[in-house]
Image (cartoon, rainbow, N blue to C red; front, side, top):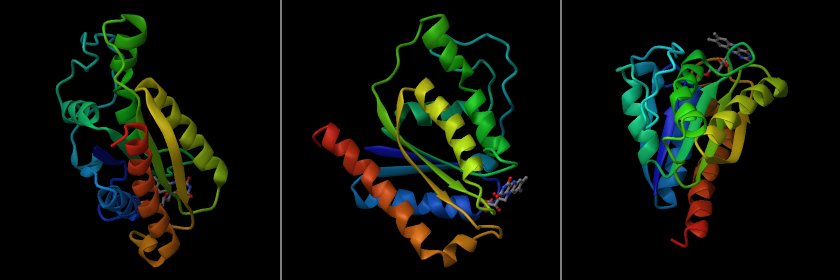
Length: 195
Ligand SMILES: Cc1cc2nc3c(=O)[nH]c(=O)nc-3n(C[C@H](O)[C@H](O)[C@H](O)COP(=O)(O)O)c2cc1C
């Protein structure tokens, strides 16, 4: 099983990336291969609503999103991680999601693309405050995205009270929970697929 982790925070070594690394370590412990993508290191633009999706559901705009399309396609499981920005996911994470509009159009409008078999997905979220509604808002968007890709929402983890970069390193319970969630994601997949 290949688990893809996508870090939607532009802050390198920040809370989101640390939590994601823990989840990916858990996935590895359960026997999966892992791959991490930092959206902050990529060069891609927001959706232009050009309505020119390729038949295979990929966007016609050639930028770093092309790497993400193939990574998402090849993954057997996805862990999407984002900080809370103004009560929602980060702009980088939302940009990525919007760029899958072409996938939605190919599957549901043009019917030129069949969904891949169902895969598990997990959502990790870090915020400075303690507003559960911000997490609920973010989770709603992520679940919608997962549904578009036929990814089963396996669960989500919110870690609150994280303001400074890498502050989460002092929060052992968050690190351990993230690691365990990555482990469980793979174990759940293996049970379904009788691996
Ligand atoms: C543009 C911006 C907007 C933010 N908005 C919120 C917010 O609405 N609520 C909150 O609790 N934290 C907010 N934060 C704080 C981040 O969610 C918090 O610092 C988080 O730990 C950042 O994760 P990172 O270290 O991976 O970048 C915001 C931070 C930035 C840079």
